[in-house]
Length: 252
Length: 260
Image (cartoon, rainbow over all chains, first blue to last red; front, side):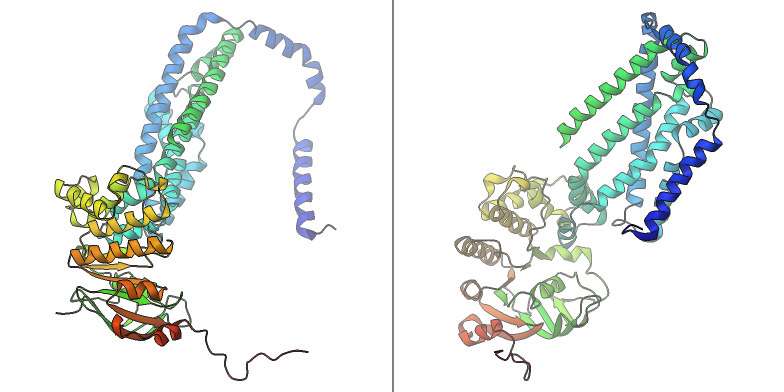
């Protein structure tokens, strides 16, 4: 037995067991992968060349996805400011921040696509359920980040302002905010990038955006058009990343 | 005239500490004077200053600052806090804000709550902040961000913020411990001079007897949480300050023996 003893052995056995269990109980017929060669080639062949006539749909879908991400992010920021303060160890008592943190963890645990499906059921098809879903889902992470930003600042200037007679909100504004602002900017841009990435697929459940066209073209076997939309999505994701890097430098 | 600060029979232990940080401490800080708290590191100087700033709780004894008794269980009322200014040892400045912003932070307790929240000073606030900057010799640094300043410049910003608060009692915790001797003299001259010019009382802590002698009219010696002496500077004997810094006498029977 190794130096880590029984614990290490148990962990290894557990991982090996989980892999074996997955193999044995899943209907994996490797032979199908071999015979699928020609079919995959046919599938890819039908995606190529991508159909450029869907530019109008791509523009319309991307613009809607962008709007969903922007308005959803705005909603998340508006919700996260009060919730972030209420989830902060240094601003409120444990009786308040503990339940708020539990609530945020609960929100984070619900996948965006599930929230979007529920919202489509509640408010109908279109971008509105997408916006609400993004705002709700992103708040679980963003409010936690804001709380951590508040708790991560140097305490000395806050004590100095308190000694000078400044109240809690004045201290938040003049001692905490200037210290946390770059962290908030960085976290908000990061969450916006995630929101834009994640809302690309919202259309699949009818919650608006470019995902709607991917679903439509795949279901109707128009793989060349689906390929064009896929390329557009890849370009958008790369563009978002580049923008994010540029913005982060700006706020450093 | 009533003293600017008075402590009687004070005992205080930090939460969770076995031994008290201050024991049976009594002292008076006469109004309008510059007074030094002299003693080695860990003697309790910072604790006394924090106590007078209203930041300690759970002490026993009687403390009054600017004629108002402090409550050991309650922080002082916010309206009275600007009257006591504090220069923190580690400056406690907002690093990413400008020098002027930091000095205006000293005005926040004097502004109306809405002005304080919006950070919109009146022309009067600005004038006081600019005067404090000029008195500290850093008028030209007003628009610089604090994180671009040297230690000596930061010290001056910390003092300017305290002066902008218009305190009647200035408490300064080791205000020159980060500075070389020449600069230390300049900064203490500035601090005690500005206090005198404003009719304020200054109480500063130091571990350097020569600086205390040069800039204080009265020197309070403190060691191991107890007051060792409390005398006008002219009456302070060299033996008294030497005793403050002498190593503790070894306990009988614990002396080391040569091994050979």
